[in-house]
Length: 296
Image (cartoon, rainbow, N blue to C red; front, side, top):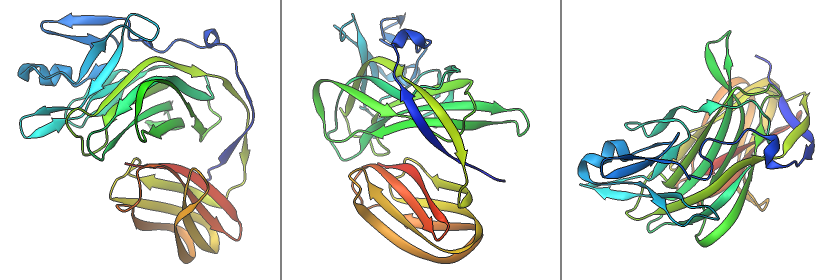
């Protein structure tokens, strides 16, 4: 199947009022359920852990600048530590992954908000917003754009964050899921992420299709922690290589894949690479393509 890489010719920033508000974006609205509260329109682990009087999502007050904000804290429960997670919609408490999000049809440039965060181990949390569109032909959801960032270091005071969207399609989305995680795959007790005033800002324009060197490029799991897999579908036979590049442009890892065509799978060990956001650059004589990944 032919695919395209997308370029954004112009980004125009407009006021927040130009976009539908995200559900309970400033975490002012909460519902009391017995001894605990849950943020309206957000899925958390509280419903599962409340039996043991453990709450990973709590209301912080005063907010920034409102009356409240969301506090996600990874908390010990028996022999394990439950990750502080919230999703804008419904959360599967077994897989700790989102089941569904909320309707959204705009094409924003960035995911923004305010945060504080810190970890007590070595497994950093993350923020991720995914725009999708239901594919009526294949009966599945297509990813339109992703804004994702792993937490690095710590933010002990309220600070602004801006995470730009990477678009894979010029099709308008029909839904969105936001995922907030206090820890990565190996949570430590008391890792925390506090968030407030979430928003989508700006509007992308001039999205256009360009010829690419491959039919598809898939990196999974993403985020990944120990090993990741690079799946390629190269259009024409060519000597191909990949590079893992950090956000400063430094090449962290490189490998020559030789002459390949069609589908191929490549395992990459990233266990010794520092956690954070990176770019996977695939290159051959016909061109270059880049995909953003997160190592946690």
